Image (cartoon, rainbow, N blue to C red):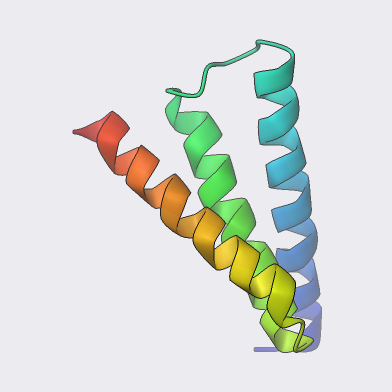
Length: 79
């Protein structure tokens, strides 16, 4: 994976998680909204990718857990 691609994914990840948090905080959507969970899931994956590429293991670990939580929440919403 190229460094530029990892950087783009990392910035997307930060933006997606901030957007999801803002939408919840300002009651635009609820936690049971699929958009919220997709933003959390894809955002966390983006941050995992950039964190691992920079060998920053603390944010990578945090966002791997964040990804798992978002994935489980998404599955619960769908089924």
